[in-house]
Image (cartoon, rainbow, N blue to C red; front, top):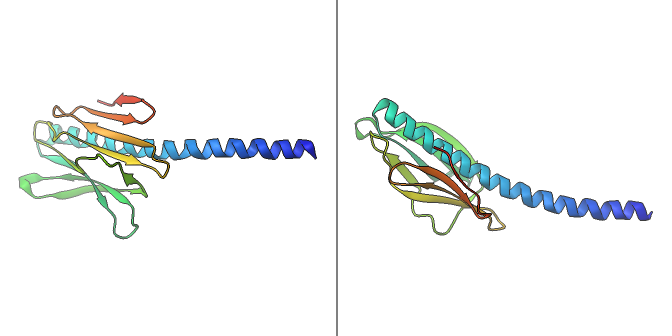
Length: 145
């Protein structure tokens, strides 16, 4: 009986740690998905000499957020791909929800940040020169270009 109760207690502790880790990794993976989509938009821009961009927008159907890759030939926006990000919240200091790359691959600089219900956050950051990196609350910063 004692062994069973110890096993139950240890299982409870490990589950709590695992679910916390799982929530953190969920936000981190969404930030990396955004960063990878930004990088794809930049490559498409340079390859095709057509402005491309990425926007994070509300999804009226699911109540979550969508990630939209678009291009702007002749200044008219055409959506290339839409990905459901699910239920994420914006981090309070996000300055832009749309990034565009001009025909040379230079970007509008800014940050899009996501957080979960425990306020763990990750940011996807774009510099004026088009450098893209992910910064997370646990001090991990990764450049992906």
